[in-house]
Length: 326
Image 1 (cartoon, rainbow, N blue to C red):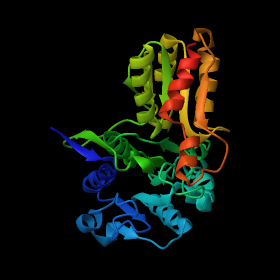
Image 2 (image 1 turned 120 degrees about the vertical axis):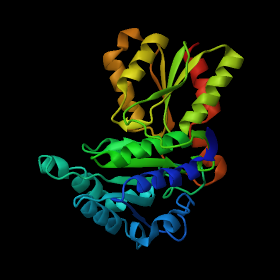
Image 3 (image 1 turned 60 degrees about the horizontal axis):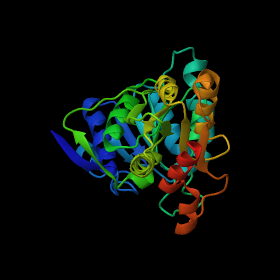
Image 4 (image 1 turned 90 degrees about the vertical axis):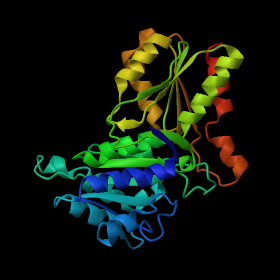
């Protein structure tokens, strides 16, 4: 049987699934326990697992990740929440210099089975300091795995794979997706990191998207089919590190056109890496220039009309693909 649940509810179910399975899994962060999380994505966990395993922390990202790093080095499998991904900037030394490097620098003698989950991206009018999409920051750091699910089912399956990984994982939850719903099967769900999914088959163009851009790409693909008879294949990347280049390259080789849709600012976004790989490995299969649809390289505005104008939209995706195909 499958149940229709929200992305928000899937987060709590994912954490609970792994905490029930493994007593070494603990959860810490700001307002995650009694308050149920600032986005209400962790409701019920304190009541089920108690204050020893679900711990509220002071407002200190450095303290949260310092404690989580130490715990992961001593046989515990911590889940650490950084409330907004923007605040990773305050503890980036721990993420990029310590957590990402320890296993390598100890020649594998010390593992860090640690998940850092955080609310990421725009769409909720929180302004420039609370709306950044920063998954590309993490993607650039060797030693980190980077995951960004777009559906409730993927939240649970990819989170389980992240918790069970012996490497540190950055788990980005796009905050505008929290109220969205999807079917989730009963029982334990475990997925695999580093596997993209073709969520809509097509023959004329490949659209590669991540997190909140996936439903927008799917809606654009429907419009392209109905209005312009253009068949768009949509790929949900899901995992930036490891990156499933095979699924992307095989699709582009068939459709001969590629469009990436990313919430990152244009400069150094994750789509640039995918474009680079396709240009190197599938150039002779292409029938049109590779095209990136991104947010401009500007701080994200909080005014609704301004935020909507800079984030990739269904209309912009549709118009870009139509122009690409002439």
